[in-house]
Length: 205
Image 1: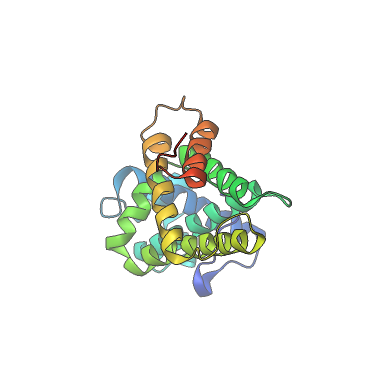
Image 2: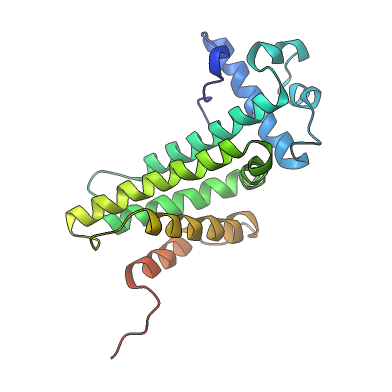
């Protein structure tokens, strides 16, 4: 996660300030990922970041504000990572395969994202909902684009987007988070892609 998400009106204006913010967000990801929101402390986060405790309040008013910024930052990182995996000229199904493969690799490298996003449901429900709605919107856009190009059937929309997103989330949980690190994530993404393309209904012949 390279570029920090905005921290409201406390967004730093200098490169040094952005680096400090990045250090705080990265340290918070580890702290919240290991301990959970309630057990994590500002002093531990600043200690991990090697930042003075007083400096924390230059960027955030509270632990809650940091948590909200972290959820937004993680959502943006997932989106940016998926953008890098998708290239001009890819077909609709290829786009879905590439996006899932990239997400699985991202989740393997940042396993804490699952715990943090799950906790957001209770710590900051608005951030939790916004995270998934934003992802679903991207699914809808891609599905409609595939329908318009004739690569996917017409009429795909919100219901299908949430169904696909749910499948991807739980595949990520099983193989990226609970996996042993040796799973072939590209192969898993391909299997899911075949499910999208062919469904599970038996065909004659």
